[in-house]
Length: 182
Image (cartoon, rainbow, N blue to C red; front, top):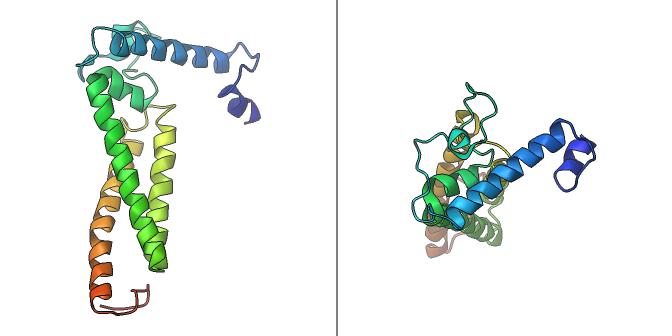
């Protein structure tokens, strides 16, 4: 575990699987940077039908089904170009900003259940985003379904909670608590 963690920030001296995989990923990510950010695919990317591993020359085996560069965010860059990547980052930033605002609002009104929900959603989604930096996480159903469900839960909760908060503020009632009934 220590060697794996250390390998993410420095060279471990192990020329085996850790360093080989790391070098393979970094080389592929540099290739994506060169043809998207500094190359002909700036505006369009390579599209969503192409096998990036095959197209970029990083296919490990001829029958390998690896289509993505082991980084969900760079997959957006490679497939959608810089404009698509900017939209992806803007979406994530606005969603996290909305969740944080909802969390702060719930904390200010001492709504512990709502604040706990928003904190859970923020932390869980942040963990998924970090995981997506090192794996094809968001492209797979194992995490993709949960990520988009969590995004929807956060949006729904942020739409519902302000209405409840506004109603209790307008009626000069005490803020809603987990035990209160409407």
